[in-house]
Each structure stands twice: as C-alpha cells, then as structure tokens.
Length: 110
Picture (spheres, helix red, strand yellow):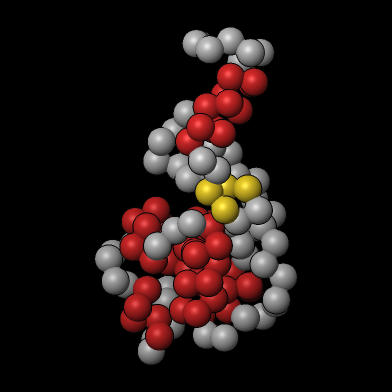
C-alpha cells in the first residue's frame, strides 16, 4: 500500500475527505495528490499524521499498527468543526446532544 493509499484509507475510516485532511493539516489543496509521485516534506507528513491521529511510521508503511499516535487528542464536544467518531464511524448529532446532556448531569442547558 502506498503512502497516499494509507492516507486515503485512514481518512475514510475517520470520516474525512482528502480535502478536509489537507485543510485541517494546513497544507494546500490537492497537495497530497502529488505524494503519489514525490515524497512530502516531513513537516507536512507530520501534520497529516496528527490530523489522522496515527504515527508517521504507519503512514510511511514502516508499521502496520494504525493505533492512535502517542499524543492524546483533545477536542471540545461543542466544536461543530470537529467530527466526533466512535469505532471509526461519525457519531450522529442526536447522540452527541445526548452525550452533552449526560455530561452536564442531565440538564438540558449550560
């Protein structure tokens, strides 16, 4: 599996398009498509790995362990720009609302 194939596969599992990964990683549009023929910069590759929450070694094919990177992810459950997932599938908005309510101790409002 190539670098681009690995990125495409893990992006799909995370619920992201290639364009979304590029945007979140802070790299230019369609830049990752060039990685089919040339190697990316280490900085760009690390940014993509962070977005996908995998190691650079996994993306490079040095390991088949695609478990999350050692760096813990922190997100705000109220951030609408973040796609929350469970077991690789996006959590439906109604379930997120239920989770928010449970975390507030059963209250509907802040």
